[in-house]
Amino acid sequence: MFTRPSSPFENVRDTAAWSKGENNLYLSHLNLLLGSYARQVPAGERNAYAALHAQLSRFLTARLRAASTLNAPSYGETPDSLWVADNAVTLQSLYLHDQLARTNASALLRQQWVSFITNKGSRPDGLPFSELTLHRPPRGCANSWMAKYGATSTPAFTAALWSQYKKAFKYNLGLLSVFREYPSENSLPADYDSGPIIFGAGAAATGLALCGAKYQGDYYTYFQLVNALKAAELGASALTFALRDEQWASVSESWLSKAIQFNAASHQ
Image 1 (cartoon, rainbow, N blue to C red):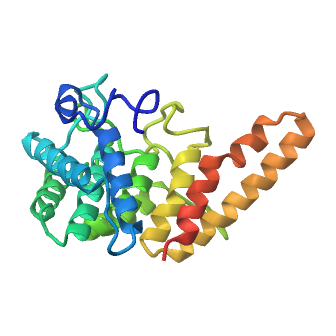
Image 2 (tube, rainbow, N blue to C red):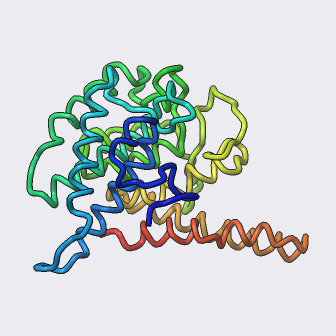
């Protein structure tokens, strides 16, 4: 379990290896997974991963505290890149561990992180830079991501973020809506994170906004996005039929797309 090729570690239980590379995004998602698993363990039964979960939470807390920006690199291959949305995942994993352990160990760190992003890691309009080292512009996929993952760990911060994000990035199309990937003044190309960009609207920004809207309790935007998704699925089916090209259907019906939709729909 937790070995290559999915893991950057030969053995993720080798805790000394955690400090040898900056694979903090992998470790943060692993920490979230361990927390989610812990919530499913029946009362009275032993959680075989409890010690690993606690140790990993302590490691990630120490890693963020040691950083001058309170943000750690996501990947060992790019140790100078500090992606804000990825660190929001780290904080959510620590918050979940706190809830399970009935502690408040990460509370101060989360407050300090919010203060840093608000005062030093954002543009004057309040939208965080997507990456702190080069002050890369805010991105739709990142803000949609943070609206979900910060809804419980940094609720006031992400509520304000969601409001400002909608003002700057949301296109209202009647009963439908979509979200831009980049600010209107930044005409940048699509990449791995953005997915396709059409007239400025990003597939990842819009798709992930399903979860962002639902976790923020913004049901109007959520159902606008559901309508947009259904329209896009219908369009993809039409293109598949007209062009006899299955890639359109495979994109709209992928497991990733279904997982995002299920996560948003099932959130209470």
